[in-house]
Image 1 (cartoon, helix red, strand yellow):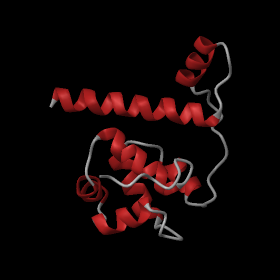
Image 2: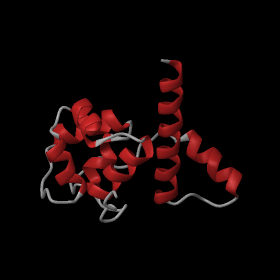
Image 3: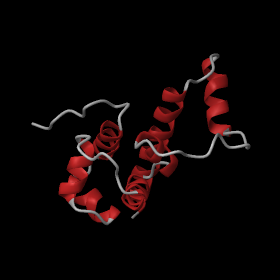
Image 4: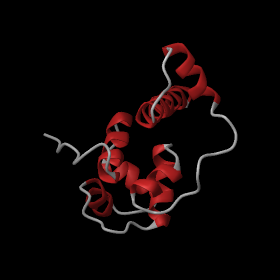
Length: 124
């Protein structure tokens, strides 16, 4: 039985949720990110106080998620919001007739990343 993540609002919970969403093992993601599976497991359990930005970058690439999001969850200062509008989020917000909060926007971005990952897997 798999261990549940500490909290989806923590870095570890986010990494766990993204990995599970993609159906990939610790080793598979760690290998793509250039880190050990043991280090990834410690990150997922929130047992690393100051994760390496280099490791977070590798994980962002491997999990197809914004690097800035992982950096912010790890407690690093990240630049403010982008000046350009995020069109997909605006469209989703329009369709729901309510503005999206940050958590909803991230969930939509994660789902879109999952769909793109599935599409790439089917095309290869």
